[in-house]
Length: 121
Image (cartoon, rainbow, N blue to C red; front, side, top):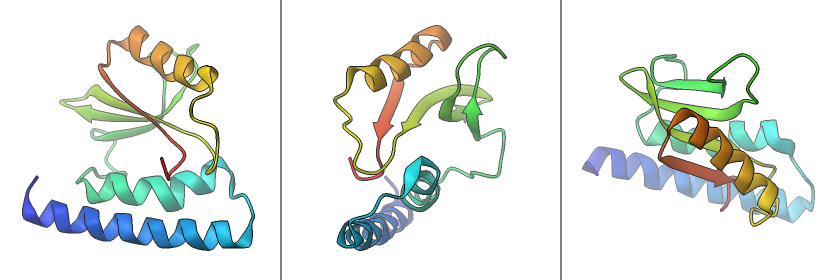
């Protein structure tokens, strides 16, 4: 990892950790959309992906219109390279439903790399 990317990533992860601590201190939930916006997207951007470039990142990606969407598809040469499925902060990521969900998406499209996250894990 290049030095600049590493520094951006360390900074983003530090900010995310601070946000998580504040959320947990409030003993509240923030929902999936806020989890994506304040915990997941900063890390994606720090890794160098442009969330506003549809040739790099597609939100709610579907290979076919009838497919269920995956939260993020990170693209390389306009082809999905990695899928990210987001759940609410604090969700049980060992739940087989979530694992089956993202693995199903990846298998259909032929994507080898998947991330299942609640923004913290």
